[in-house]
Image (cartoon, rainbow, N blue to C red):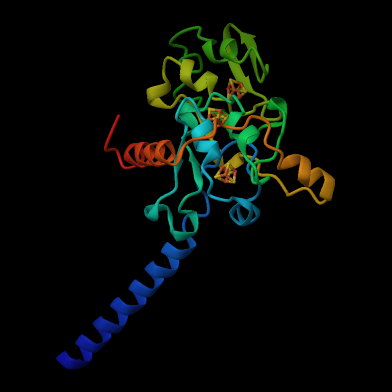
Amino acid sequence: MDSSRRKFLQIAAGGIVAAGGLVGLAQGHADLPRPPGALKEDAFLSRCQRCMRCVDACQPGALHIGHLGDGIANIGTPVLDIDKCIQCMDCMRACPSGALVKVSKNELRMGVAVIDEKLCLTYRKKRRCKTCADACREFKAITVEKKGYPFPKVNAEKCTGCGACVRRCPEKDNHAIWLDLSQATRYDPPQDRMLARLESRTEAPNPILTPREWIARRVETLAKTYGLSK
Ligand code: SF4
Ligand code: SF4
Ligand code: SF4
């Protein structure tokens, strides 16, 4: 192949990769973790007003604002850090658009806990540990089969993905128990108009911010998003 032809093919391939990158950037990541109660992704993106009320309502700082790296479609939308979420539901109560539907805590499924039997202390017979089962008192989603050792088992039907078991596991850094976020439930928008209005009713309005406070809040959140502040 002569050098001018090779050069042409290299430029064409570069153009295809760049175009693919731009399309990907425009579409964004389709699997970003969203706040509890989020509609299925397409409906969520079309309803979310990018008002950031949910981000402001989230006291533990479990939500950050989607940025360019998340894709153009996701800019300004809330993205969840599940490790910080305490399922207080303040975000869904603050959402004015129905992008986050009001579901009860028991109906939530933000993921499903999975025990890795190769890494769990009990399955490895290193220790009679049932810390995860004790951590799940609220939902009783982890039962213990006593066969000499107290083998913990997750009942996926009952697990809400709250992560309490993961946080308490002494082997969490080794991923003996982890949350499978691919099993998170996303919701269909309500078909009934009355229900849709109820879903979009803000139950816990955030304090009204002055423009100056609003800008300061945005700068603070963006700084956190980009790791410029603690
Ligand atoms: S449920 Fe509470 S902690 Fe979790 S994202 Fe919503 S506001 Fe934040
Ligand atoms: S409060 Fe609702 S509409 Fe506003 S950014 Fe959050 S999800 Fe979107
Ligand atoms: S994630 Fe929450 S509900 Fe699920 S098993 Fe762990 S503690 Fe129970």
